[in-house]
Image (cartoon, rainbow, N blue to C red; front, side):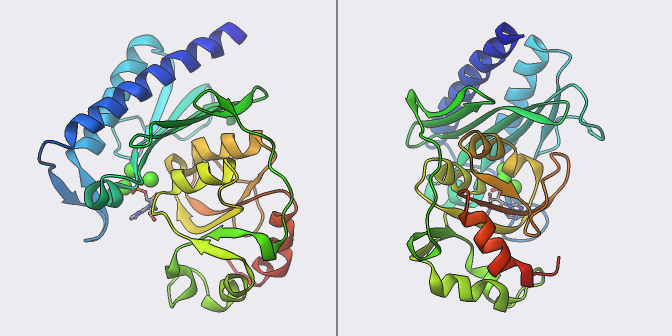
Length: 267
Ligand code: 2AM
Ligand code: CA
Ligand code: CA
Ligand code: CA
């Protein structure tokens, strides 16, 4: 069994690096940009190309594994049995298009609903965040220490300004007192990068109102391996097959923000 997961890990890393090289090579070519659900929801030929690249590799080496990907080239998945690769080929497509940075490849591998491996690759910085359940978490070859407790006053919380202005998902009065109290707020525009930064201790918490499984799958494995807490905004566990709000934080800080601020949120 250990050999099996080592093999999965080795292939995953190799394919993620290859996918990163394909993305870097695309910087010198013109992108084909389309919109999805609304004019700000972008998808490019590279999002599709990278997802198809992963699917062809996985199908070749692990034909029994199933794949859930944002661009829909995987299969329709209704149960969490067996091994499922949850893939976001480019997380932060808007950043990819406008900035050519602050995007990542995100791959989470689950077995019977339990996260076994997580990979977030910040292609431009060549930083691969990865974790294996029970075996530690790393940035490239450097092992990450367990997450430590921190007070609200000393914490940096990542959230989008949308959630403290009028929007249809959360009353602005829930999070604005938290924003006033924390040391600072940030927003990077890539859920995967924000989750990786919580794992690395660069952020203390991340709050967002709607993510899909491919946005949080890898980050959940990474953060939980380091003792961080991953739930929705009501404090409930995330289902790896469902869209959800997401609240991740260092231990202690999670409980404090949940009881002091998020208890006022009605989902
Ligand atoms: P994406 O770039 O893979 O679409 C942007 O704030 C973050 O939210 C990104 O991680 C983005 O992932 C994600 N996201 C989820 N649903 C989205 C949507 N409908 N439109 C834009 N970004 C979305
Ligand atoms: Ca998208
Ligand atoms: Ca995404
Ligand atoms: Ca994406």
